[in-house]
Image (cartoon, rainbow, N blue to C red; front, side):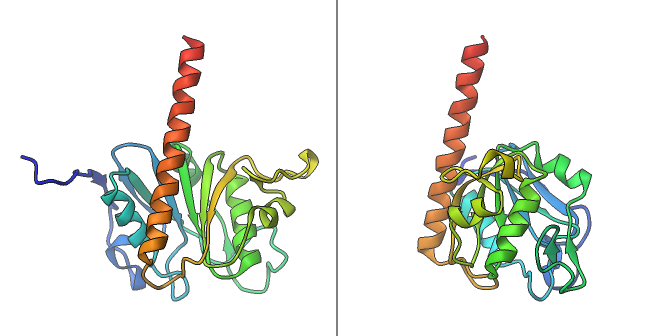
Length: 215
C-alpha cells in the first residue's frame, strides 16, 4: 500500500553506537542501501567529528529518492597521511582494506571534511589515493579545485601534471560552507541534492554507453 513516499531498505549497523555518535554513527560501521548508488564517507565521531551534518545530508538525499549508504571510518579522526602537520596531534586518519573494499562497490562517493583547509585537502588526497570513484567533496573550509590540484588530486576542472598525480579517484564537485556540528541550511541541502542527482545521472548514462559499445 502506497503512502506517498518511497521506501528505502537499509541494512543497518549490527551494534549500538557509543558516545556522541549514538546508535547511528559508531566507528567502523556501515548502513548500506539496497542499491549501490552513493556512499557517504563520515569520519569517526568524537567531540570534533559529530554526526551533524552527515546524518541530515543522508536523510535529505533519501527524501529526494536517492539510495544512500553511510560508512563511518574506523580511524577517520586525526591528520591524514602525507599531511605536513602529521605529528601535531596523536591520531592519524587511515582507511582499512575492508573499508576500501566496501566503498569501491558504489558509483559515487561523498567525502565530508571539516573547517581546516589543508586538513580537508590532504584527507581527500589520502582517501582518493585508495578509492577510484568520482567524488563530491563537502566541507566547511573555503576550498576550490585549484587548491586540490596543487597537492596532486585529480579534479574535473583542474588536472595536476601527470607526474604529480597522487590519486586514482577524482573530485567532480565541491560544496563549501557546510558547517560541522550545525543543521544544514535549506539552500545548501538543495545544492547538495542537485549536484548528487546530476553526477549519478552522468555516470549512469556513461555506463549505459559503455555497455552499448561493447554489445
